[in-house]
Amino acid sequence: MDHTTPSSSVRTKFLIVSDTHGMKFGSEDKPLKVADVAIHCGDLTEESRLEEFRASIRLLDDIQAPLKLVIAGNHDFTMDIPAFKKKVADVKPPVDPELVRKAYGDYGEARQIFEEAKAAGIPWTPSFGDWGFRYPPDEGHEFSIAKGVEVVFTHGPPKGIMDYSDDRKRAGCPNLFSAIARARPQLHCFGHIHEGWGAKLVTWRDHLTETPSHFTDIDNGKSIVLEKLTGLRPSKFDLPEIKQEKVKEVEQYWGDRCCVTSHCTGDPDPLEHDEQTLFVNAAIEGTEERPLQLAWYVEFELPEAS
Image (cartoon, rainbow, N blue to C red; front, side, top):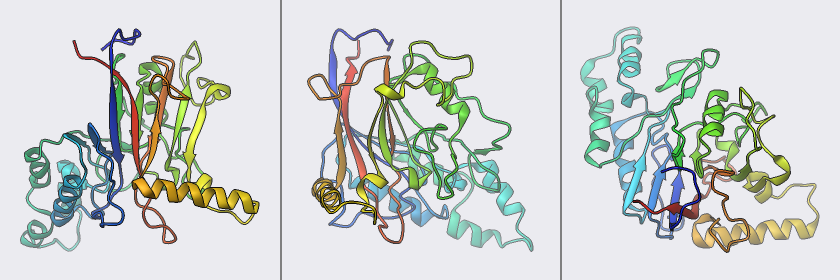
């Protein structure tokens, strides 16, 4: 698909989750909306155990959508077979191979579970240590996102977009931001940074810099933060009426069991093709205070397939 204004388009509904870490939906928190496409942006598990992957399949079964797309995350290290082998080899003293197989499966077994479920995708995030699908932050990574791609889903965020960690440092990838800025998809969804949950409709500047960054290539005056955690969580500095508004908004979202945003023709903020990108951080795992964060339900128009 190219980025010329499409002559005909289709309203398309996406249900987006990430960072479920082996959880299952309860009857009180399972998303109720029916989508055309469900996307899981990785970290299906906490420890990459087979039982957690199977739990993730059951969680995906609970989502009402005919097409479900899944990528792994850094916690799902057994899907990164070289990382899995290295992790096992580095254990001192050596671990019993039968114990490894019982908990984590044979090399490639976790992948097979999802191949049989017709799910696909491989993610990369900047990190140190022995996680899966990682690259050293100081070395970077090349993200090949072609111009004309309408939907991108990665495990980690681009630098500068909903990527603040608990220590108030940006944990996103600058290489990923540059790739997204050049491709300008309509939707980029991700997770990984749980504290960054939210959505932002970004308007791009007319001309990109040589090395795009969130400082230079976003028109902040025309961009909109649709939702973020601080916008929902009451603060001691909030006026009473602001606290009440936040409580009502959260109650409305929980009525649908997801956070809803629509950007179609006729909506207050329709997505401008090739001029805007909707960024969504859909990390579900929250904090002790609020252990579950909402899934995202997004609707916008995609060009009709020729």
